[in-house]
Length: 483
Ligand code: ARG
Image (cartoon, rainbow, N blue to C red; front, top):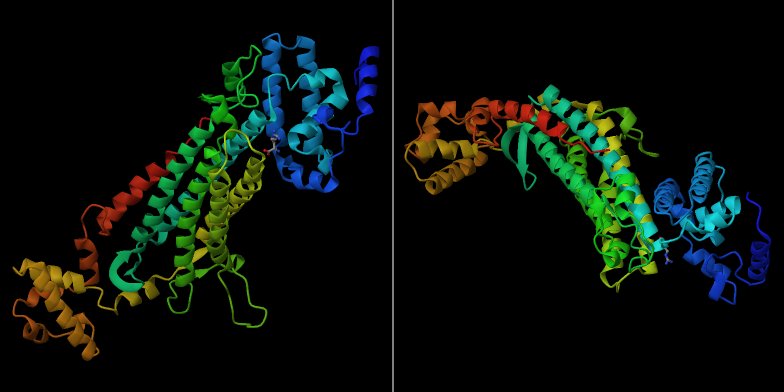
């Protein structure tokens, strides 16, 4: 701690007679903050986790102030040393706070001033908490989105490995949750992989929009000091500057970008989870999820429940809630910064914690699922899954598709009456319904043939799926962040 000059001691004493001596902004106040107000307005209990980002921003800011001659080199060095010490304390879990510390920004500044005296009070030159908090949140989200993207990539890799290993199984594809047409399991899983590739793009786009420096906007209108925003942007690895100071301090689009990309990702997770939940039921019995990823019932000894998948589905609602919360928070805000904005933090923290946890668990669960190819195939043998093939067959005999559809519809109704599947009907029976049926129909009423014929681009024909798996390997790799 630097010794105070006599004049400083005097002014410190004068200030200390004020009731708000502890508050950095206490100058114009004559009464102490009500303790309940202090607790109500404090963000320190949750923004404490932003501390390393707050310090990183302050370090870059102090270095710039020193470069620009706004601080002396000595002051700059002193500030740098003090900030690093505070960060170390935080890392060691030795930094403590009370609601009176308000938020992470005031806590750091207070500690710094305690450590290094007046030089600490110079750190806030040409800066406001308004641009500071926007910076902290951007730095935090930059890390979070990149980490999420990596975790999602692991999920994609594990899902692809599953599709490659077990994807040859055939199962009913469903519409309206009614058996529709046979598909390869790999095709079904690739559908999710396509969704996740789009999610990756959304995340990287969110990341790019996050990566703009708000600092240097000060409270709202810029600053009178000769600052170097480009230098700070470069120092912190930002792609550029937020162009308008009023926008920079009040915009939370980047938070919404993360929450909306995250909500869509969770929606995809939830759909996958729903499939896994259905498939693990006795009614489907297509998969068995490893015991380590299920839990039991407190009363029913036979139960093994797919809780991870259920909770991923459930937590999706929670993430949507945060998106709605921040959208609602923003909608009526006048320009520029308003304290309401403090409410964005818990939402985005909880959303990202939830999304990342869900991603990691799904990634770990995928390799622990056993796919029951026999059961899947068995399910394709009932439910008239080849009816469309039969209609297609009739069109090759010259019928228009609408007529063919009606003919096969009648045939299905008759088959149901007789309690038979289409493959089990004799040719004479088919010909009674329509004379265009010939002996070659058997080549259409066949599972493998049905799959192979769906050879249109994007279809489930095995050759197509093989190529799609291959293409997916490359698509997954294309998700790199600059740092
Ligand atoms: N804790 C505040 C937040 O999260 C920091 C900014 C406070 N700015 C202010 N002018 N009161 O938004």
